[in-house]
Length: 277
Image (cartoon, rainbow, N blue to C red; front, top):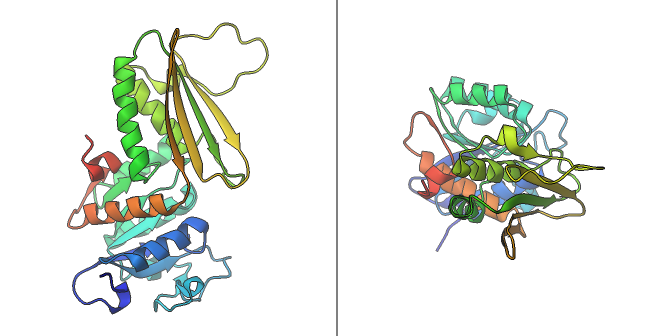
């Protein structure tokens, strides 16, 4: 039987959540509340959010006793770990506060530049960080399958990655699609920067067999669909993952929180969390 975290005695992970009034933030608040071993300890949002000052669980019709704040230091004061699915600039501001306060970090944000990723790597010398472009357990198992497929299908197969997301997503291709490309390129001994093709229009010439193609679809309320197509002569293999709910990302995030417990430093990803190395 799982009691509500705020009434449960004993040890639990004290979790702060960034972007708490967004779609993902609310899903995380609910997941923390429903977990048996995590407790909401902080709630961050942009200063312009109408949620500032309100109870972070108000939308669930119950009080967590945690007020939403725009001040990272206040929001992190009681927390052991922050879960952040916001935008790169916001995540980096939170990263600086986490590093100062010794708070670990689970990063689900996508769209970082290489220089921004370097800042995260640098901070991981002082705090423990799990960073993954997709926190879903199923997606990470899919990445493992892609690694195996790419190693076996390394010649004679054209590789295309097709992804679809809701109309509100601001970056393309998705972080997950790029991660799929990276995993495949690595398995083939290629560099994704050299072999990725992101746009085709007009007379493109024949397809270069060493490339990895990306196609992006945006529309409606699609949570996230990803298909990798290995197209050979006389056959094709499709490996597909479809998300029907953001709850999978929230559950994966809590697994990352548990993995970080007791760790002081280091940069990890979901392969580490799930033992898929």
